[in-house]
Amino acid sequence: MKTYDAREVESLPPPVRRYFEAALQDGQAMVTSVRFSQKGQFRQHEKKDAWRPFSATQFATMHPPGFDWDARIRMAPGADVWVRDAYALGAGSLRAAVLGLVTVADMRDIAASARGELMRYLAEAAWYPTALLPSQGVRWEGIDDASARATLCDGATTVALEFRFGTDCLIAAAWAASPP
Image (tube, rainbow, N blue to C red; front, side):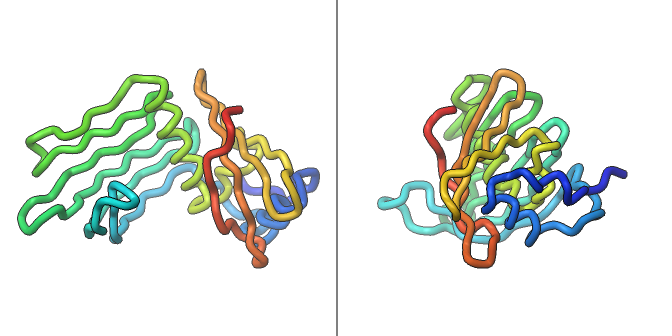
């Protein structure tokens, strides 16, 4: 079992180093995969749509980076949309179908899907922070004392996100950066 060595973060930009010092313990196991469940509210369009309840399960792997999100979104009583959102082996995909039968979205095997899904993987890596370490392929550049840019390459796909860290040193926000 691989473990985290705190010396790995000594040369990182200050806000990133403080984040790892707050989030990880020297000697803890490196996360290799994770499975979890979610319940929450989903809104497809920021201004047009109402929030809809959803439940989902997600499985993520670190080597290679990937995830599979399987969700049910309640659009109306008795009418769920089944959504499968994934990044695996360098390819991104998203499929949504009413009751799993009538497809309303189907995107896969295009560069934009791979970029978008790998970007989601990088943003969600805050849930399994060892995935954000340089030894796991993430390159960090400082922006200022409270933010940094993370870049991740997987095969032909490269993505970058900017992370802002709160006064507790943990990740407070992440957003799409300019293309790397």
